[in-house]
Length: 276
Length: 83
Image (cartoon, rainbow over all chains, first blue to last red; front, side, top):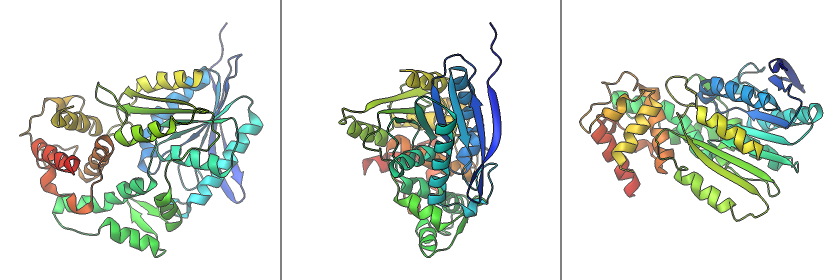
């Protein structure tokens, strides 16, 4: 018996005056496993990872999962400029997407986040708890502050390395943000309402989350979790009520590589992590 | 894992060099010699160093000299990890 390919439906999810571009993949397998909400990473990482995420979504749908991809306010094809985005608005966007998914799909719900998307997904679950919602992390950002620094560094490092001049420093950029000024980095207009809460955020689990699947990708053959990841995962293992799977596969860091890359090992590890 | 091997693996990954970096030696020049290593790529390399080695790089630690060659980059990372 031949099943048709997965159906992918683009639509706009209206959240008050905001309009979020979404893609819903609906499974056609007789067995529907549940639903997955995907939260994308920050800035250029979103663009670089698009192809890998699309490939994973297709694999997930073929395995029986609903997948909902939502572009947060000011990102991708959603309404609004990046400069209008704020941490609170993004959390609100995620909540709206969670509600939509819960209304349209049955079965267990997973929030799948890549990089900052992982941190945002967990933050959403803490802000608005939902027992039974599980978390799938791809190379999660642990420290919002470090993530912001790495982004600000695009303005700082370029000048220092290529011209040897000091130019503006991250401390100065942070001061501007603290003073209420938006700043421009790599073509992105970054508002204080987005940057400052990001700087305060760190990857935290809701107390009652039942299942967490943490996946990383490393290009060298002998894979191991990044040092900061290992410390955090080890600290979480003390919670006996939580089913925690942490794994690393070999592959390119597709969210930041110069060329668009795919990580086939991650496709399989993700399917396996969710299938347990 | 030996720092130089780790750095070459990291460069190959971040710069999408398709295995070319694995043949580099300590003397291999980087900044100015590898077209893929532009200022955006430098930031990506620093980010990857922070995450793979579990270190934090301050603004004033970043300069062109560290990226002059494989050897200088290895020294840079070894200084960071020693602290």
